[in-house]
Image (tube, rainbow, N blue to C red; front, side, top):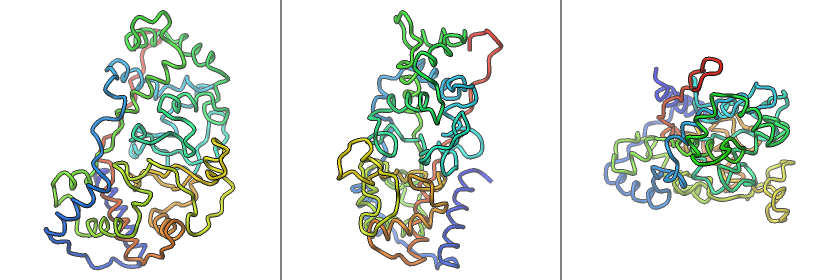
Length: 347
């Protein structure tokens, strides 16, 4: 079974579980599909082919970033790479790790769920609280975070990379003309360039681009309901979220000790506000929410409808929305880690 079919099967299983039995298949006719595509395209839009900033990224920069993404020497004890919390390889290359909160190089757990790195370059900002404006700022953060990769300072990162002969040529090629190209800012720049290549590809864009058969009847009905229910109040734009901050528990209170964006801005209006997550590939990026407290996608849909919109959805309505979210499953292939080099040899 291909990974794409497996994700479709997961969405179908959630559909059955959320309403106790599979609801009768709806029939969304051609005329309705055409109107639905127009409405969805106007409300959501199609994901651009390239992320902002990618136009200046060189192949050498991207290649270096890919190597650094899998590099465990960027952690204090050589045990952790970016890929450990944001998996791009293996059977489940969702850009997340499937954990409620991720463990760091020193064995401690973080307090927030690791979101998918895919499509991150389209987001309004990085991290749940938006404390990093760019991918470059985000990429440097975990390296120096004591709970994550735990490097003590920038000098430690640079020393580790300068001690590896195989990095001299790639850094020089990515940053030509610089007297010392191996630096923490350049490391973050290369990582960001690679991450700007991590765009998802799914059937919603096929549908919006004119393939009216790209969505099943159930998925099309789910898209209709998604638009009608008010989900697009927060989950709009081509990323279907990730373009604004929103209070968690907007209509019905949501208990959390996490202060969200308030910790960054100290603005009282930002207390318990978080960056709205993107729903692209959400079917494979659970557990959900800032603390990873909800394991199932159907439960997440139910809770969001209640807490954010004040609406109590039926089992069939939840099933239809979950089916639509299944159409957002990424069809991208796993990213293979760079092959290890013989000791001392350039790679």
